[in-house]
Image 1 (tube, helix red, strand yellow):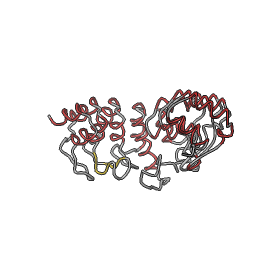
Image 2 (cartoon, helix red, strand yellow):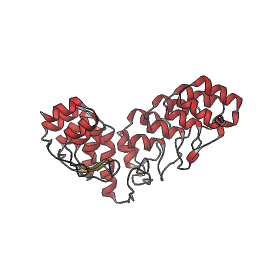
Image 3 (tube, one colour):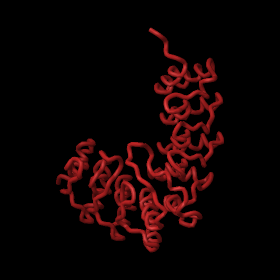
Image 4 (cartoon, one colour):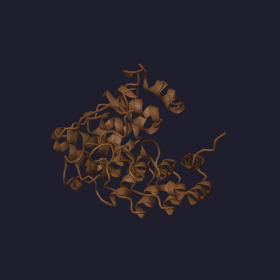
Length: 304
């Protein structure tokens, strides 16, 4: 049997989270820290994807390029933002990782990636090193609308990967406002909801894959969910969410049930959320979604 090639051996060490073996491999073959595999992914990005600070530090110490971009422009810092790894983000920033590099569309910086997913803790770490880009959705996600020096700029990044459907962002001021509200919601920035609504944001708008309430519910944000409902959000508003086979015609209750967010489920039910509504893909109720994802307590609550 042929032995795995050096890059494959290094990859295996990362998968096994064997920092000692990885150190031995890159010491023997130092060129590996500059090598890349499928789609241009390097070992540092793979180590960050495992969420292992030891592996990442081993590669940085061996001379890995902290700003290496794969074919999509993705860097290790993008990966830390995607996975909500604030400590790894700090490690990469200390190694001079750039915060302005873009992936998967104009404006697709690590900060944008973190805010897209509601990874607020990592977003705050990144924001200390620059607001890239300074558009309205970034400012809303950070809870400070004054940061939006270019409200409509660099919105080309709209999806984290090709599993999400295609969309073409426009510079329509209404779209920009509605999107900003959804980004504020997923990052629990209730302090800017009122201002965005006064500016004309529509509380039940679904600009791209999710209303503000849907995102708040999916992220398990009880305060944001309650605040949106108090401001008039429809608890039974249907929306698309995630990829086409994830959520079509779902409600916030489906998404809270999927993630097992009991407190959010209770808030939605108290506000009149209808637990009998079925989604468009699977004709499944929120209780069905909870059961499919092994969230027994949520399923019981929704089946009562």
